[in-house]
Image 1 (tube, rainbow, N blue to C red):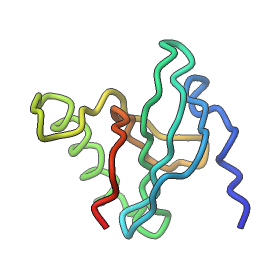
Image 2: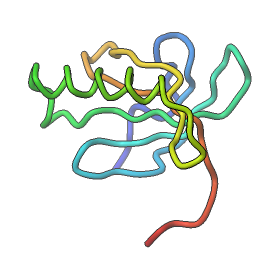
Image 3: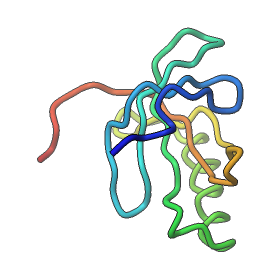
Image 4: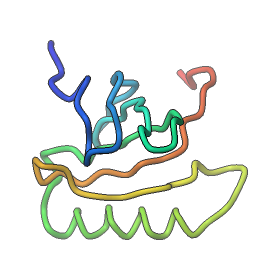
Length: 100
């Protein structure tokens, strides 16, 4: 199945390179931050969860995560809503083995 997000530029900044995960809450992509030149992870909220309450909780999660600093958590660096009205988080990209 083709993914029309791959190769697109999110909010005129994040170039989506490949889908690296998907679950009940949404999809995660590896992306290039074109302003800083770094690789990041972008998590989109699933379309099926886009109620006002869930979108508010997703935004709260981004704000809370951005204020925490721990070696045991992924850092959240940005939050927004794309042109499809889908909320997203931008997080540090960590490479490693799958937990599966």
